[in-house]
Length: 68
Image 1: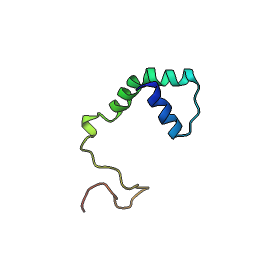
Image 2: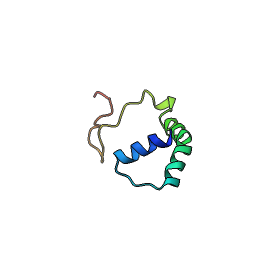
Image 3: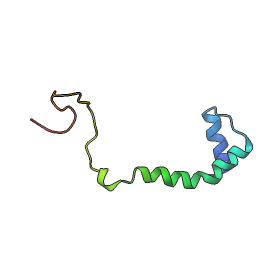
Image 4: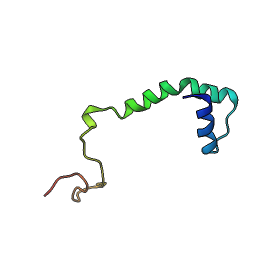
C-alpha cells in the first residue's frame, strides 16, 4: 500500500500519525496483510459450524447444529 493510500485511510479514521509512522505502515503493509489473511486460511475450520449459543451447564445445546 502506498503512503498516500495510508494517509487517506488514517484521515478517514481520524487517526493521527507522524511521517515515520506512515512510512512504517506503508513499508510493512504487505507483510501484515499476509499475516492477517493467514489467520482465515484454516482448511479444517472452513466448514465448521459457527458458535451461535453458549452452554453453562446441563441445558440443551443451542446453536450447535445438532437436532435432538
